[in-house]
View 1 (spheres, helix red, strand yellow):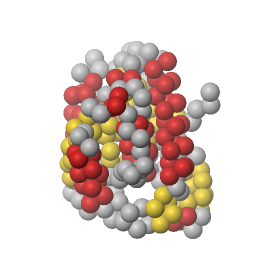
View 2 (cartoon, rainbow, N blue to C red):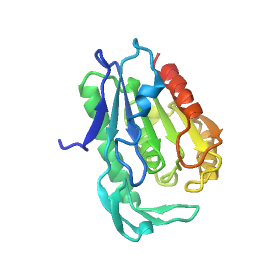
View 3 (tube, one colour):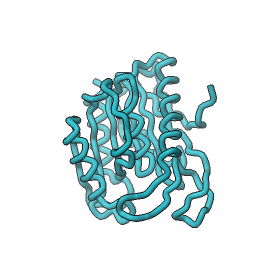
View 4 (cartoon, rainbow, N blue to C red):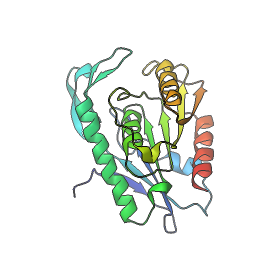
Length: 219
């Protein structure tokens, strides 16, 4: 089985949990790797961090320029017209990475998905449709692109979902994060929303909050 190339950060002891963290448009798996040391996680919580690299494809909103992307974005309007087939194909690739973690001895219930921007849209699709229960989902500065088409899995109907968004985000307006929050609450999911005084990025206050979420979900 072919897998996406990934950067991995392994704990000093055998991993008992895994975090699969998806980057945004034009970045790669190295983008969020430096945050792992900033999380300052307890030594008795050995987590493997997996940072997959998206393939490079032409992106319509950037004039067809080829760059790392989980899917093509066709229009840069508030509703974000995207290539859903490519998004779902990327989701299928992330499912393979989840299965690999299970094969390495980490139960699905101890696997968390984190996704930023484009990666968050793929993380929504993957976590909410996956056929085995996961530990949680963190959606960072993103949007629920497949809300109208996704086939929700009963296995993750109780999935804890945490949404973080910059209130000054000029790339993915925070109203898209709030819209996802409302949609998920209406569907009955355990979902929280936290805004931060930042643009389309991650801030230190947020890193501390991510740390607390990981500890809460995996302890």
